[in-house]
Image (cartoon, rainbow, N blue to C red; front, top):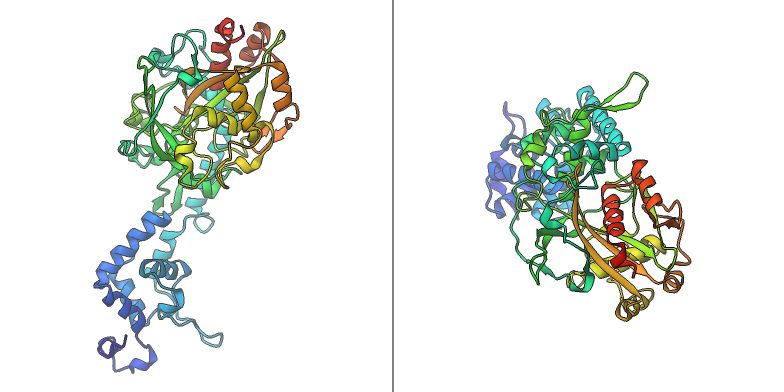
Length: 507
């Protein structure tokens, strides 16, 4: 589209010929065809940068004018990408002219440089303040990774009314109504999924969470804790996939005992890991010998945890339920396996012995049909068994929907129907440090079936190692594990309740 009048409108002052700095008529045409003023476009681009790219940048009317007048022939790559994204065109359709190698690029104004600094999200080497703040954040994140259980035990003291008799000093808290009086057969557990459950009140972007989100630039902090993890300390497994959000737990109902909505994995990181980071920041300190020492539990500086409020009010925050299963090889000498989770590979729960299998309650694939097909605790257990115990990485959720008619799923289904595998739900507990939820289950397999299905189990998987495949399921071993402070809160609770109800589980 030709705009001859626009060229005349952008002549240089002092009589300088317009040909020296030709106006960017293509960009002007794109803006005017969209019915936008320069101010409208500046605001729209700033909003797009903030919402889609999580890069806070204030593009002004002056910036748009300089681009259109040709004063800036070749803006920074991010600005070009932003414009192309907004108008839905290729970058070479924006009208900018790349400087020739023989040309001397015009000096950018201080305003352009300031805007560029504002969009920098990683890392902060160019500014000492940003570099120090990000280094401090990474140090606390590392301390959190190595001290999760000790911090969970400390955080448990913040919720005295929700400490569980018999599980004191394990990092476990639970609402009494979330724990049924005895294990419920898994086929009797009824799930309900709401299409539109509403947005939680807490997202992790609150002012109270600012101190656990490091600086992204001299003037802006990261808006989301998950994006700081992504840029500064990414684990190997870190993807923002759809998850089922726990909305309600009520074992007194004959149906719809567990209700779920939808959420993203990063929604949990933005709240759970931010809460944990805050505890590590304010309750830990480096000792003179380089050790990491914990102070006494106190609410005094935990502003974000105070903002979250009641940990069992599921309207206030997104709660991503993880399904952890104590897998028991039955028979005369029952045994279990546990998982040593690697903090460099997973975003949460590293450095502790955890249940195996265990996994986030989520669809098996990004394909839409997986949502209904995988909305099942049993299906989640099956898939995690294949992935974590047998090393079948094709079931990690990035591929096609799982074919449950194939092995090992078909054999597990047959055994479940025939009664050679007994599965129960033990209830729902929270990790006091992160306030993340554990939907606890136990599955008991007859020895022959267990050996046929899992006799070729791996020693290491994508999330850590399996230090031993045979841990006796007996009182002394469980007491030793509890006493050595090795277990994650979820594993401690599953072992405790499974042993408490062993006569029901191991007939």
